[in-house]
Image 1 (cartoon, rainbow, N blue to C red):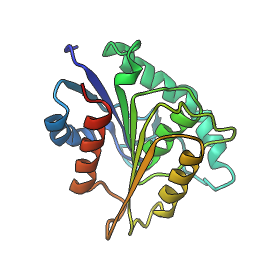
Image 2 (image 1 turned 90 degrees about the horizontal axis):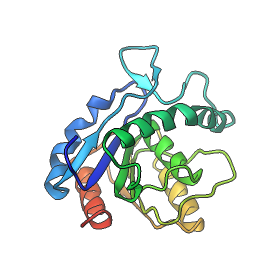
Image 3 (image 1 turned 45 degrees about the vertical axis):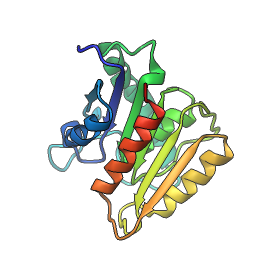
Amino acid sequence: MPDTTRLVIFLHGVGSRGEDLLPLAGPLRHVLPGTSFAAPDAPYPFPYGMGHQWFSIAGVTEDNRAGRIEAARADFDRVIREIIETYGFAEKLDRVAFVGFSQGTIMALDALVSGRWPVGAIVGFSGRLASPLPLSPHKATPVLLVHGAADSVILAAETVKAAATLQELGVDVESRILPGLDHTISAEGVELAGKFLADRLGD
């Protein structure tokens, strides 16, 4: 692997694949030179199509979602650990960032609030905080949450709520609600992510 100073790990949404987020590496690389980008597939196949998922959404409810997230932790950790060891960042977690979309954001935030992955930064697009209690985040990890105001899949109110909870827990969190945007990542969102990561993971 190349000798790089940062590692960004993309975490895709339900029914997608890691490679679907790799195009984000292009614009991010301009503001994060010397960065490696990894985009793993989630461990579970999505039953409708060729994509994957971090946990099953079949019959998912507000009551059972947290349990599914908790059950998915071991496989999530295995995937992340393999990438971090492959790229040589096992002793440099403060130089690692998670960038998630939708269910990928759910898992990135869970990795934070469970205290399992004290990474250098997290960017979450169009997600929610749905982890089981208790929440015990690594407070040195800054978080940026970006959500479309017109998101019809996960309401933007979820990001507002997540930001408030993280702030109450002592996490350094920023949030942006983008007008007119549905459940997707916009060029504006990528620009915000790039500026955030360059500031928080800069040399």
